[in-house]
Length: 270
Image 1 (tube, one colour):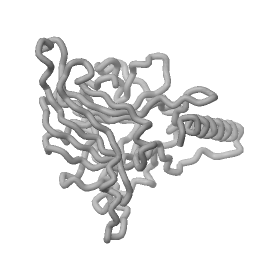
Image 2 (cartoon, helix red, strand yellow):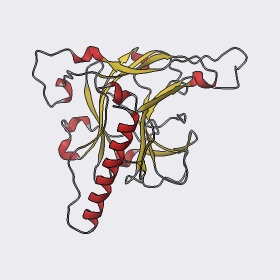
Image 3 (cartoon, rainbow, N blue to C red):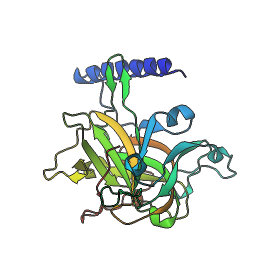
C-alpha cells in the first residue's frame, strides 16, 4: 500500500474511533473489553511502521536490524494451541537482531556509553492529528515473542511506551521477562499499572498514573550497558495487543513483578 493509502486508512480509523468514543460518552455503547490488536509484524508494511536506533548513532559499536523473517511462515504439522508453551506461528514475523557491544569508537572512551539498541513505532499522522491508542479499558500489554541470540542477552530487554503529554521525553518502561529458554514462542503479559515513568534515562521521583487513553508509541529496547551484557541478540515478535484478565491464556504467566527496581534500567530515547 502506498504512503498516501496508509495515511488515509489511519485517518479513517481515527474518525471511527472518535465516533465510537462519543457514543460511549452518551451512554449508547458500553466500553469494549475485547482484545485490542495494536501492532502486527507479519508483513513488510508492518515492519516499516517502526524505527530503529542503537549506540552506533552516537559513536558506539553495537548494530541493529529489524526486518521481516519469512522462515516462520513454514507450515506446522501440530495443531495451534492456546497455551504459551504450545504456540506455533505459521506466518512471517518481525526479527530484531544484531550485536550488542559495550565498546565505543576510538577517541570517545569516557565520553559516551555503549550498550543499547531498540525499535519503536513511528508517530502516525492523519488528517485529524496524530493517531494514538486508547488502552484505558484493558489491564495488560500482551506480546507474542521469542528470545533467541546468546543466552546472556535475553535478560536485558525492556518494553517502552510513550503517551501523549506535554513532556515529550517521558517514557514508561518495564522489563520483558521470558519464561522459555528454548527459543520458542510465548505470550508475555505485562500489567499497565506496573510500568514506571522515566525521563531522559532517569526514574521520575514522583510516579503518576499512566495516561492510557492516548498511547503514542510502543517499542522494545535491549540495554546491555547497565548490566555489562554484550554479544549477539535476536528477538522474534509476532504481535502486540492490549488485553484483560479473561484473555490471559495461562495465569501462571502472570509472575509477580520484582519490587527491587530490576524492572527498570536507564532507557535510551529512540
